[in-house]
Image (cartoon, rainbow, N blue to C red; front, side, top):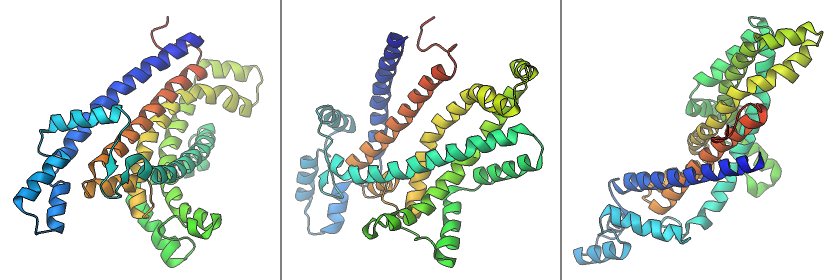
Length: 322
């Protein structure tokens, strides 16, 4: 079993490398086809540059080469460990990305855990008595979370809790004022992402639980005299978690997309805001590495979901093992 898991992980890592290679080419191509480049920004900032100066600068930055040639040069440098420097920050990309990545990990991690902790118990509770008053209230909450766009929800929270009530700050991280200010600054972005993700997970958990509770083995367990709570949590939930795990893994990538919008609304210095600023500022290296990192996070979440399948249901075999 251990060798099977290791072989499966090695196979997925190889697939991940191929996906990242294709993704890097596509992203580099799209960024390269965007109107404007760093030299155009230099020209707008210094109108006294002559055409000879512009040609010399394009040669220095390699912008006079075809797009595929520039990509191969970047790929060779990246494989050797040199990811280049950020034009906006005038520092190495990894050095710039570190603080942004930490902020996003805090925001996404807290929101992700809270959405799971809230959605699964509420989904089980709603599935216990479908059509009850509790089920209707939980469904209304789930539909509201799914229906409200992230940007609209964030703006409404700012208006209510920052402008009207003055409970939480509308932007920033608040780290300069200590941990209490940092937590207060994190509240509104976390609430925004948590409400949105909880609605999706809650609906899938409820549907999976209702379907599982109709199975014959659940009736057999009930016939043996097991309590309803024991049946729900010990037998029904582990079997219902298989489709839910898929949604959780896929929602992790969606959570990063939602974080981009949320970080922009709340001026939160995370990866989403960094990618947005780097794209708007033609900082190709920083935008490319940020988008590739988002791809890695999504692929890692999918790998974790596959491993959880095998753990939740021993009948599932990883890889091509029969």
